[in-house]
Image 1 (cartoon, rainbow, N blue to C red):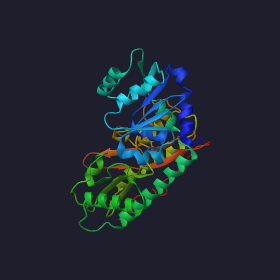
Image 2 (tube, rainbow, N blue to C red):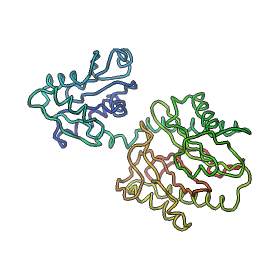
Image 3 (tube, helix red, strand yellow):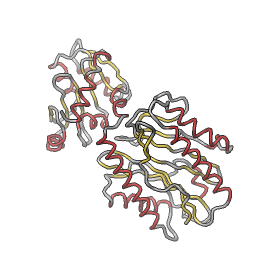
Image 4 (cartoon, one colour):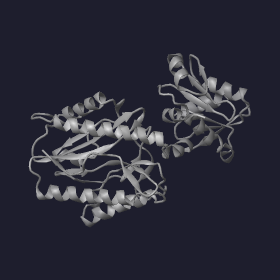
Length: 358
């Protein structure tokens, strides 16, 4: 049995509990997880007897090489074909991804189903399965992390007088590609000086000037799996305030990493980071959650934030990324990709965390 067959079988085992006979999967990361398909148009009708993958003629050859279940290739809208296949297999209760299907698609599918077939909303069934990575998935994430770190090191060495935020972001993404990445996991963030207080700043024409932080948040995707890292530079001599801010965030990040282990609620990891920043008087400067899961998406469950009760499990790939942002001065975020292990966690990110002064 292939890994994809095993994943589908484990979902089928849950059908009785969910009171469905089949599951319609259209969200592409979930389709890829269950079939191996890497293209841009594909749907899966998951049934106990005959799972069927639907795509269009552009992907006839690709799906034949990637997908290990029955494949139907046809022109025109896919939803009528899904409905017809459900009728042929005598499906009465068809589950669908409630958080992923638009009302228009839902209405269209419902209108095409035969009498006696009902649609049943299902939430997070595939996403929950995706939270725990297999050893093979972890090795891909590890390789993506390595590419990311190497691209960072090469990009930093290329910094020169007159370079802008956008220039550095482009240099980093170029290096990722040259090192073998499929693409960046997201638009690379480079924010210099006071703009580093914008947690998700878009790199722009602002020059990299001495006397301030440079925040670099970047991720490389390899074989569909994401990595994520944030590191800080300081151009010129860092003053006492900058060093104190950096030290506080680093202490918070280390405390959060120390809290990661199987069975711990995700919210507890977040509280560990916030407790440290509170002691430094920076709790109100922490504007986001402490981390998130990553894999086939750059942001996926679990979320490591306030009140999150999901318990961490061995094999989860997550980020740990507390930050503190001070308007008019600058911000600091330090982020690693880690994997939950049997006794704690493994930090995959090899890049040193000391403030890099240039």
